[in-house]
Image (cartoon, rainbow, N blue to C red):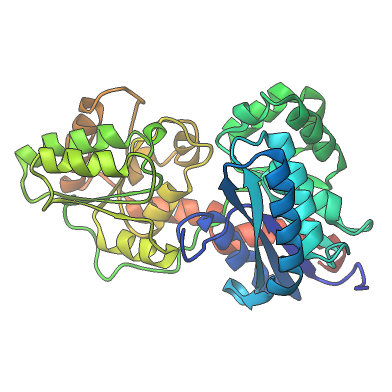
Length: 401
């Protein structure tokens, strides 16, 4: 068994980029890229939910078969930052409640480990349920266990009584409970006021080391990265773009991501006669997303609610002005540099708020009213790889500093 003074760590997560969904879990990928170089070793355990309709009997049979298969099939492969990745499916009945999901992930991880604990003195899980619970149940007795919570659907999680019970125990047991922004803090404190003093804040990391080939000269090419979902405001984005494109036909829009609205929006784009100006390429790898940021002029995100807004920080890091809603996370992330980085608009159920925000932002940009260098410097000091990695390492390895 490794000594507690070693700088070995493990990450447990339900999200990590895969070949089928290369953009999902990019924030975990960035966290691993930032922290792994400061560790002796880091292993990522990615419990990938494979959801299907099945009754209880079928679910048990499938889980047992998966457990036998994973003993032989699950193996380590290299991932970012010198870390290693163990990717395994978590067979999940459709509609399974959050508490049951947590116990499900706990069992699947134990199967992959062959019944042994995670062999690392530090275990860091992403989201309390399911992965935080799986982590505390499978960690060594002497391990320091941390959880970063950045789920945007915690209110739904806490509608499940079993999930509330497990979450309460989880926060009590972990060494450190971390959040990425104030909205998450408020939800957890409201649900568990007795744990308020245990909540720490460490943001998701963002790389500021990939400069663009040339600075943005005009805000002609728009970019959206994220889920093509109702709560992201993407239908209003398409309508707003149509309004602005009617005024300036040189404008283009790329909407990269997957979701239930991708097909309806593709059809709507065709109805508007904008198929040559609007592209919906689907889910793309994280490195390709970063390339799009460095080749487009404007990041537009009209989300209804965000806990952090990491994509916004990535856009500024890539030298892009941003047009984003005050939806929880972004106004906190961009506090003090709102005008330097771009334009914040209110969450409204219409297209005009976006199109009017664009007109204001473009006029300010062309008049020299933004200061992206200042915005980048401020964000890098708080969200850059080095700053976030140091914050984690201070918690993970206090005896080796």
